[in-house]
Structures are given as structure tokens and as C-alpha cells.
Length: 230
Image (tube, rainbow, N blue to C red; front, side, top):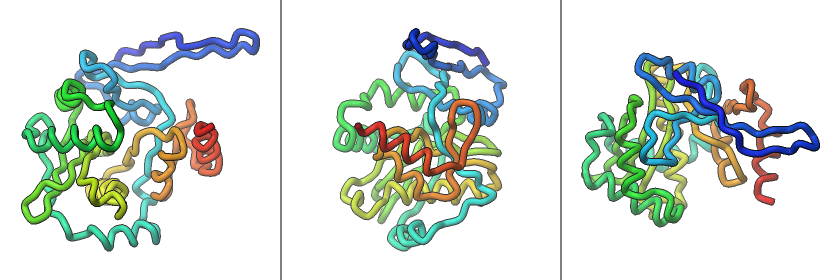
């Protein structure tokens, strides 16, 4: 892997200097080790493939992962409701592209262009697409990076008529459950910035990356995220 640092900002009066930490993935790299160092795959520029950035990410140590009462409540709504199949994300057909683009346009605004989605699907990383269908109709899809030791819930899209029933959280729960059943060590949940990301703490036990080590101090994580709303 190739390590890159780029200057971001400076507070010279207090001797605090900001640098962005990047990794460029190369064939043969240990992906699990990259994730374990707090890195996540970058998708901000369609012309850059295989880059990772360091951020405040969250993960589940699957040896201790178990559904909470809230997880079980959500599971009652959706367990058994879908048929699921997994295959290489590069093989995604047009209905999947449409699902993602419509979902992001409605839910998050103009953050997922067709060009960006195409670059994500073309990543050199081992990326799987998990399709969830109900009565033969595509209802949800998850893009998941992983190997035999870990999984990473990277992006998801789903029928927004089910958002009030917490389908999004169920998709993460289901991914973590599948990873544990497969004997994996960790399941990565993405970043935790701002109060809206704190739904990820509804899974237990969550660890988060603090810059040099993983922490299980959820009170500190919640304080950081909530402060970012101000």
C-alpha cells in the first residue's frame, strides 16, 4: 500500500496541524489490516479508485455481537420478508443503478451521480452486492466490501416507503448477522459524524476509531457526534 498525507489546516498558535491520512490500495494488500488502522474506502472522486481515508469509523467485534431488544423488535418486521442473493457488484443491472440513484436523490440530495456510482461499482476492492427482493420485486440493495475475516457495510439503498419501519437499520443488522454466521471477526459500519449517524450505536458492542486506537467509550462518541450539530 502507498501512504499519502496532505495538509488540511493549521492552528499555529497552539501548535496543532491538520493532515489528511490516505492509503492507496495495491494488489496483495491486507485489507483487514487497513480497516483495522481506521481507514475506509474513498469514493469522492470517480477518477480515483482504491484510495482509503482515515476517519472516525465504527465497527462491531462480532465475537461479542448479539441483537439488543431494539434489534429484535426491528427484526420482527423484516426477518423472512425478503429473498436475498449476493454476487459481484460489477454485475449490477440497471434496476440496481436506478434504485441507488433514486434513493440518494430523494434521501440525501445530489451526492450520488451516475458517474460516482459507476466508479464505486468499478472499485478494485472485493465488493459484493446483496439484493433483497419481496414478491420478486427489488426492494433493497447493499454494497459490502469484505474478505474471510471482515465485512464493511459501505452503501445501501431501499424502498423509502419502508423508512419509518427502520429498514435501513435492519439491513445493517442483517449484514452483521451474516458476517458473524460466516465466522468473521469484525463488521465495519462506516463513519460516525453528527447526531444522525448515532443510529449505528443501536448495535452492540460498537467500537470507534479515535485516531490511534479503537474505543468502546460510547458516551465520548455520542458527545463528539452531538457537538457537530452546533
